Length: 188
Image (cartoon, rainbow, N blue to C red; front, top):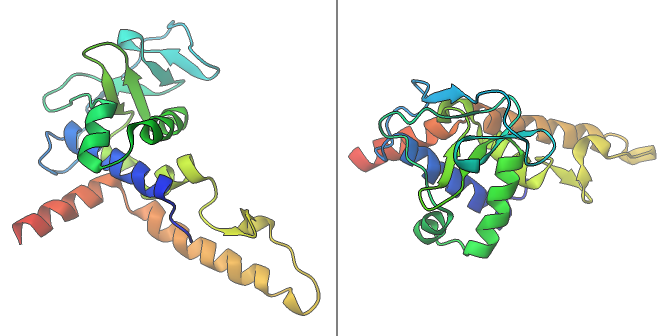
């Protein structure tokens, strides 16, 4: 598995947004839902999306923050600065995360980005797939597409096992898990 700068930046940005939604304390993100369904009837800004409050785009079936305590919108410029990510590069990453249904955006001076669901429901694997596609690749193709013949036939099984092992780790680790680990390491 290769973790690109794009994937690393996406995870860092998602963690920063998740921390803001929990009041920044790294508490049990996702332990209580702070989202409310988007009212039906919004005009879509792209296929598969609806317009949310303040003109932001929300994936079909997605949700937006209900505005509960601690649920702050995070501006792209603030994310870029706090995480040391070039803003122009981050904007493309945020677009991919929004298209994948992990983030939604509010436009305007009071706008910003927020998670579409609690941090405890978004896995590291969700983020990695949103910005990079398959978790593992062989010669630039997803591991499940690798094909061999003759003496190398067994290699496909190795790559699929590697892919499965990586998926187990990244799909079981949520943003909330990482925020709790951060809090524990800061205390101890």
